[in-house]
Amino acid sequence: MGELAAFMILSLVTLIPAVVVVTSSNIVRAALSLVPTFLGVTGLYVMLQAEFVAGIQVLIYAGAITVLILFVIMLTAGGTGARTRQINEQVPLGAMAAVWLAFVLIVIFSRTVWPVLAGALPAYNVIAVGNAFLTDYVLIFEVTSLVLLVSLVGAIVIARREE
Amino acid sequence: MQVGLTHYLVVSALLFCLGLYGILTRRNAVAILMGIELMLNAANINLVAFNRFVAPGAVAGQIFALVIITLAACEAAVGLALVMAAYRSLETIHVDEINLMKW
Image 1 (cartoon, rainbow over the protein chains, first blue to last red):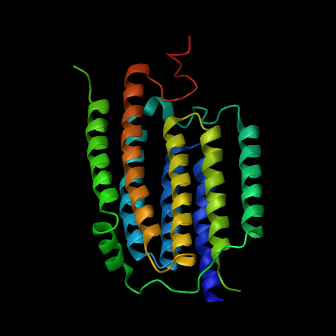
Image 2 (image 1 turned 90 degrees about the horizontal axis):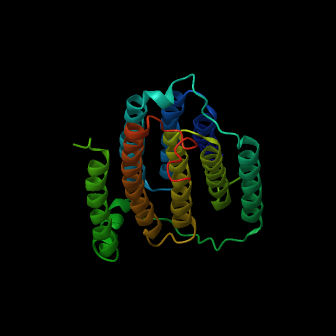
């Protein structure tokens, strides 16, 4: 019972600010509403026993990406003022597509029988995550670090003021 | 009533559709990137939930979620750098006004 209540609260904390993110006409308010959404997702990760993913979610999403988005909003004042129109003419079409997709997905999820196993994750699975990263998934690990480096250099080159 | 896999999948589907709505209806390139972040978060919830309920013996889903978080950070950095470059040369970041290649 307590688990269901916690899940409901965390889902509402995730979804209600997400509605503000996609509908608010004030872009700064939309960007700041990302923070409770990301923190709600963090709570869902904790409920799913993924503590390390939860910590990384707080650090990277709630910390870094939100601050990056706010910086860009502040640096591009011409397009983000509260008076500019923020939505295009596709609102009915977009709403129809989103509602239709949500309906189809929920129907599929409720009709499928998933092969759920009864086991539980190890209690401190940070150790398991670290071991898996350096044994079975070491290639993914290295390639990801390479992608990180390339995107860092690319972002600097693209955003640099030209001579 | 236990919280099962379907509950997490439904929350993730709703979050994904909200992100899709944001991408389809926003004019501002930064707001479109926010919608993409919502969709990536929905995918991550799916991965971690399947890891917990379908394959609890391994942590592969958490590994994939961590990789996706890293790539989302890369995508945000490059995307926002592109927005800055577009704003510097075109004085706008509304994607329906950026039509230099549409002749």
